[in-house]
Image (cartoon, rainbow, N blue to C red; front, side):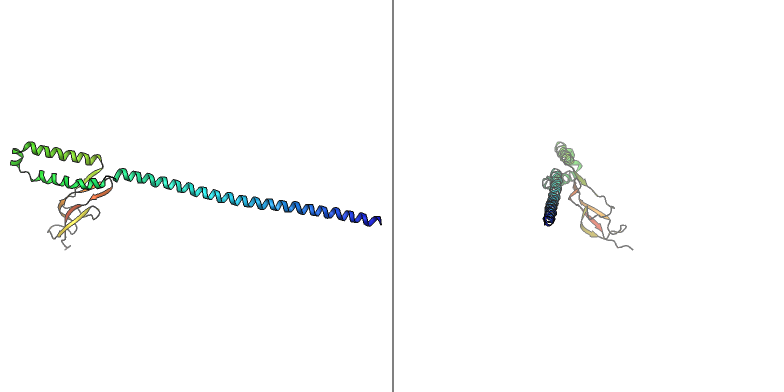
Length: 187
């Protein structure tokens, strides 16, 4: 009878070892599952961080562009309001006859100095004149057609008269040049 006890004892050891091995395997698989969860959480947090970093960089770039635009174009309303002053000074100077220039030389000189000062301020702030010539091609991006007329010796789309100069503020159009355009059909 001693033999069956010995076999039971061996069976108990084998069972205990199997249970211990199963516990270790369960613990290892639990740790592996926990590691997988931690890796997934790490990857999700890394993705959120990278997106937040990209959003911050994009916001910085938008802010820089808005600041540059404000510097370059912030005064466009004031500049646009000053254009009639230029037009009136120019018309006044063009209207003065030689006789009036002799009689009112000091006045004319003052108006010319004022005109030069205005042009200097325009140049200092990036405002430049768009002055098309008669015979140039009409460009709808830079010119405003005030009228069309058939003029012999011209092609359709040629500028036949300049009514008012246009102005650019850096690379933006403040006011298009006002022009007359030929409508002579090709023939």
